[in-house]
Length: 288
Picture 1 (cartoon, rainbow, N blue to C red):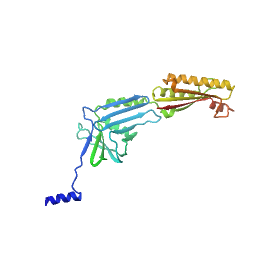
Picture 2 (cartoon, rainbow, N blue to C red):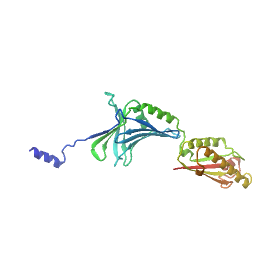
Picture 3 (cartoon, rainbow, N blue to C red):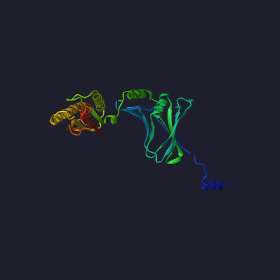
Picture 4 (spheres, one colour):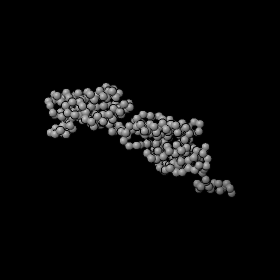
């Protein structure tokens, strides 16, 4: 009789299946946090998760405060997967209650990602000694639960260094300086005050970015004076700017200057303001 019940359960597909829980987290002795990027362009805080991947927090130079968190997995999701993120108490803080931080989705071929306030909240929980933990059903076996925890062990000192790095990030990004137009005072190589501020930003950025591939300098003048004089003046402006960029660490073979003189005006040259618009150098930067 028992044998018949057993076979019926199998044939009907109602035999209970035990779900397994696979947990990934660094232990108290081996947990490490590292500041892998630390300069005015980018700050990156990295935590290795044994047998799983790593947690990566990144903030970059920008006009806006920003923070990106990525759960960088060795094995990426094969399908859209609901995820729960909770702040749990670690084993060495028994009795402390946890709570839900957020729910979101993993997407095929990508790691988990959180932005800005949510990412900062994960760091805040770690700073409190909590253990942010991601839970989801394994996309290869939905019967199995996966738990991925970020350990707060050895976190505080590296987090302090990360915050110090973020406070020193430049308040502008590559996109803000990749196309820069500088205007000049009449009759010379003296930049306007606004253009001097733009050039200072450009120099500050280039001093730290080693991935610049090409800097293209296009120099123009207004039509006041002879064509020969304006061509020569444009050349002087281009050469002066090239010297500034060389001081910023850009190799000379990565700087290309093109001199246009009074050709290709963008205004009529009939008024002071229009001539100032034509007295310009356009700098375009590309990266690897």
